[in-house]
Length: 142
Length: 142
DNA sequence: TTGCGTGCAAAGGTTTTGCATGGCA
DNA sequence: TGCCATGCAAAACCTTTGCACGCAA
Picture 1 (cartoon, protein in one colour):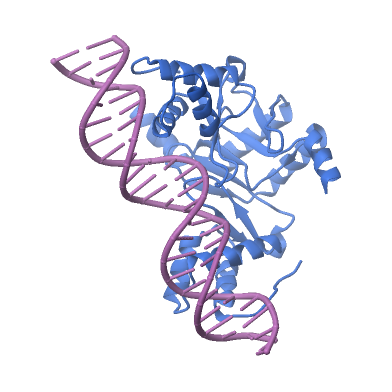
Picture 2 (cartoon, rainbow over the protein chains, first blue to last red; picture 1 turned 30 degrees about the vertical axis):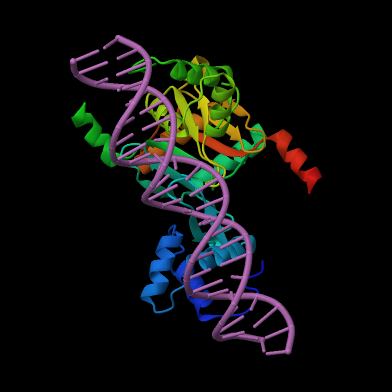
């Protein structure tokens, strides 16, 4: 995996360091842009997209697209996460997106791959349902 | 499940009948618009989106978002597909929808319900990925 | 110096919203 | 008649592209 390519600039460094620092969660272009501005190294949206595209291509970052409207999400791929992609839960009640980092679930992929000859793309797959909070609320509303 | 609501118009009927006729594949706003125009009952994009939103809300149609750029896909939910007991696999290559009747997978629901306090709605949840056929094709293309 | 990175603006596409009009019940 | 559906246009939103300039190597 190419960790870098081309020239080094402050903006590129900052961008990557932000992704690394937030490797435990998804981030998006807006957040990145806001961060870089607050750090005194603003970066145009166009360039952010260009850099992210390269990082995705180089396998440094993973891109998720859950909802067309929300825009894409990006996440730095930690060493420990390369064999450990996680699924997502999306609550139909409040829209909350929950990251499911659970080893148990990698079995799901293996099972479906082996028994059903289907290779799951976790970056596109989302479990829809009701989260704990909304489960309580809904019952009171009904 | 509400199968309909509001007034009946030719456009609404045509729209739904197109979705029903193409229930075996996913379609999008462009296709729907083109079809309705060719049928002599053109419908503005805005209205198509409004109708689709309602259909999705009523559970008549399912909405898929693969990639922000491609735009959303829609698919009519057939009676036989209103299954709450099993999961679905959707191939990103050919759009095929596969029903997954597998006892092993009900464990997933239980696991997530118990360990992660999240109640999965299997009728809404779709695993995206690549099916066996497309997996083979892709390899030859590379 | 070379050519990549950046900024800015404009364009592209999809989806949403507002408002006036027309059609269903 | 009252209310909903529609048409049209404009806007919002995310993302990409083009071009000129600046900076890294």
